[in-house]
Image 1 (tube, one colour):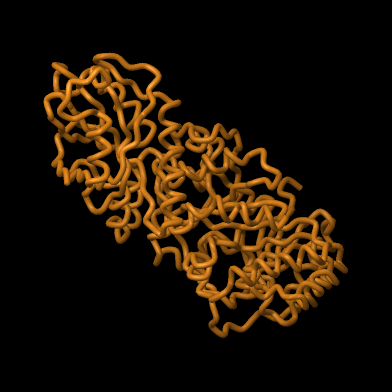
Image 2: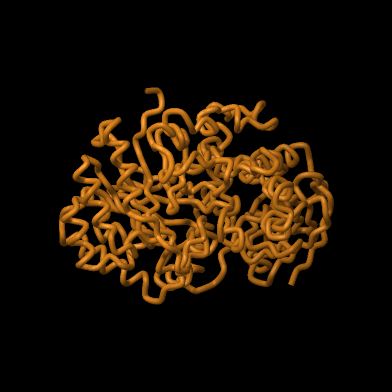
Length: 517
């Protein structure tokens, strides 16, 4: 058979002891009745009678699976039929009793969610003391010494991304086997928490982190939900190819018996393939799932000419707009600084949020250089002086945050250029990587100080002595290089000897309002 079933997700309940801000299926504590166990057993019988159950992995998920009192009756039955199973859990209810039941029914793998350091995680999950409880439960799980693989799943958000290195270190010390990083999708409750979404600078930090630990003892893996290959390659040298197997090698049975593809795709009638209460699962698998297996379904007009199609395949259904029959947005556009335009077409109610992250630079904006950054800039360029060290072009990175159309520069980082002269300072990959590393370190420390993170806003470079105070052809070439790498930025020209400073955007070189505090 061409489409071999290799993984089956059993969403055994929609009830949950947590109430996560990002939950795609809107699980919670509402008293939803669980589907009778007999129907799950029926589906397993159908599968085991037609296929080799030893070749199919069952992933028990929810909601929170451990809220079902008869869960281990199901897992025990699955093992008796020849299946291997793993648990997907928030880890809060994983006490000694539950661990013993997991052992008795031969649990093979477990995936436990951690979404930040204690305060961040607990607030995100809306459960007081959740983080410490999970850590203690992992220790008990390690003592039991029967699980083949313990994986931590980290859902990366705007609030927890700079806690990632410390959480990873903590989990390594606990002796977990792998660390999986997952991105938030615009489904379920995540639509109500748009402030959790990552922007381009966050992704850059994320991919550098992954690259840094690619040979670590505890491997870091990226979730399978999106294609990032084209842009990720620019950041971390990754050659990993994305491919979504939902409907091809992966299926799920939802809490109400619905036969579906991936449980992490937005729930829609169009993707439903039947129900185990009234349909034979094997018949559905062999004769249904056509919408998942027909690649042309996801080939929108934009995708037809995209060089990434053979790898991306339209990003599966994770970013698909079923009303307009096309992708909501493309992550390649996110990395190129076009996220606001892409999102606004299908999610107009969120446009203001994205504009704050990546403002439209066609509109006038204000560049504000705060006092600490002012001192760093004026000291570095030796403002008001003719000095041997400012007789050639120099460059600094401008770091801070965006609020509405205000670019607030909090810090300035010197760019250690390899080549510079009296009339030329060209950015290169080496100096840019140095800057990005500095920003990463800065954000880690800002988090420890409980201060907001910062991002790369643009660059300032000098035109010393009698150099013309306008963008030269080499400047324009350099700005094009930076824009290709980072999207639209601000650019500032400074002549320290003549005490002149002007701000521009780096696309149309239109002068912007500049305030120095």
